Length: 617
Image (cartoon, rainbow, N blue to C red):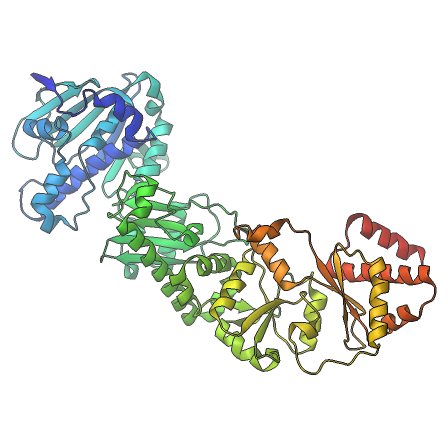
């Protein structure tokens, strides 16, 4: 037996490891199983290229709990280590077995799926263990070795009688980490981090069959060949759906469709993204995409790696080019990570275009469930906006669907104003804005339905990118003013009469909330119409949904226009009414009716209105 000090640059690295190496102590199990997988895949590679004659077989990584002895065992059947390799790779932390292996076999190993760095990852064991043992026998014909360390730089190294190839790591669990001796805890961690590791992982046994046919079999907790590691041509729609439920066992709804990612240049990346059904609520749960490195789970916080608008999707991304243990800020500034985000954006846009082209009716049927992601993508990713014109849809209140170019073509004859601007009319709520929609449709205009919470930002973007295109909500003004033509009716009231009537109205209508606007409309139009100016409303909505303050407009009170039809019989009757009390009562009644039409009559005002009308019956 020999003993010595581990060659570390810090006098005692172990307290630092325990405190700083990883923020979450449970990571130790991921690291040790990653190392075991690494050792197994290395052996597979050496047998494949003829570097060794040993039989690879069907190796398994086993995790065992010895609760009474307060020990956790991780056992692999990989290439193992000689005594000299233990000295080098375990005692000389500055060296990495994986790095040396890759340097030696870099040309033939680039596709072998080798995970990582046998070095600091191993020392994460000391976050939960008061003592760690390694019993290991190399695939080379050399004696086995037994290494022991109690969490100080001192270690012992002696011969072992281990006969079978591979490595067993024994963790003597510390008193402050006894939770890692609980079967449920270890099972939870294995499923979380190692569910798709490329080597089978055994954790106990389970019973299969019924009655006399019951047999005890190894409990293999992982799927070594998950769907994303296969080619799309190997998978059916059913395979994709089954994998979705494997990822999200508690998710009962089927995904709408999937996007299979597969690229090997200029970086390696595979994965499957799923579009789940989404509501219009922007506060929906994110963190549903799982990030892996060579089938090792890294995180489900993928912001900065996946474009932000796609963090509302679900699925898996696997890339060896994303480091396992780095800070978020490092990831977000890493060149490979930025390329990955751009690639994913392009791939998603291309897939959406092909889905739209191949089956437009199906795409239209799913539009309401996916639109919030796509609209957000148009706002946040310029590269996505460039491609979005080919598949982003604008549904009408009647259920027709147009792309923007189709919408322009369909409306240009009717909805181009006298200044040559094409005005797209939209509603945000079909029921609340029904009377305004009806007035627009009576003119032969199309009204599209735009009801997402970011609609104001989106139309601002569309207007800035499309010359002589403007959007107006149907309740922003009287329909005649929304699309200005040259054929406006002439007012029946003289200029003096119009001014006089306006002054009367302004004594009754609350001026802190309404601007009285006198308009010569058709005599059949309603006498009072309440509208909300497009610019002010849009700025308030943008401010409310994160428009950077928008000059503080989010705090402005709601302001409306009261449009008075000077050609209505009601306007003339007000002007000729000498009973001031009756006239003012009629004005209030007409204002309440206009407010009711706009959904603005609420609470105490609505109660008073109902009582007043019942009393007059």
